Length: 185
Image (cartoon, rainbow, N blue to C red; front, side):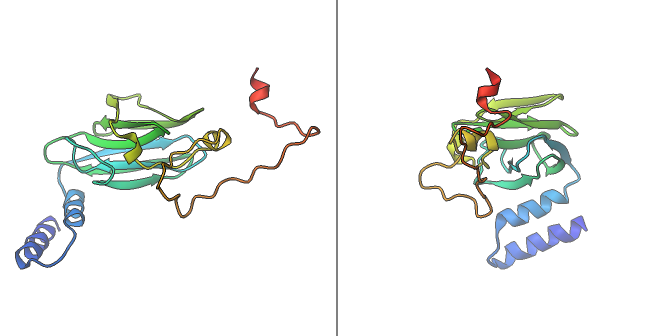
C-alpha cells in the first residue's frame, strides 16, 4: 500500500496534473512508517479545535490539519513525520492567546475550561509555549466566554456555520441562577 501511494504521488507530479500538494503530503504522512500518536482529552462541554501543523519549524493554522475534538471525549491524532518525531499542535486558548504544543509519541494533552477560555496541560513530556500570532488560530467559544461576552472571533472573521450561541433566559428578581458569579463570593 505504501509503495502504491508513493507511486501515485510521483505519477501525478510527473504528469503535472492539478492536485493539492497538501492532500498528497497528508496521504503520504498517514502511510509513513514513522508516526506519532497523540491523545487529546477534551474535558469541556464544547468541541475544541486542534490544528496539527504540517511544519514543526513554522507552524501555522493555515498550513495545518484541523481536528475537531468532541466535548467530553478522548480523541487520537496521528502525525506522520520525517524530521521531527513530536507532533506539533496549535490550540486557541483565550481571545488573545494560543498555544503551540509539541508532544512525543503516546503523549496525552488535557483540555479544560478556564474563565477566559481553555487551559491546556500534559501529564507527559510536552513543550507548551505561547504562539506568536494567536488571532491566526481559530477557536470555538466556550460557555464561560459567551457568558462574559468574550469570543475567539476577530473583526472580519465569520462565525462558524454550526456555531449556535446558547439561549440564555432573562433573569428577574425572582430567579436565582445557581453557580452564577454571585454565588462564588
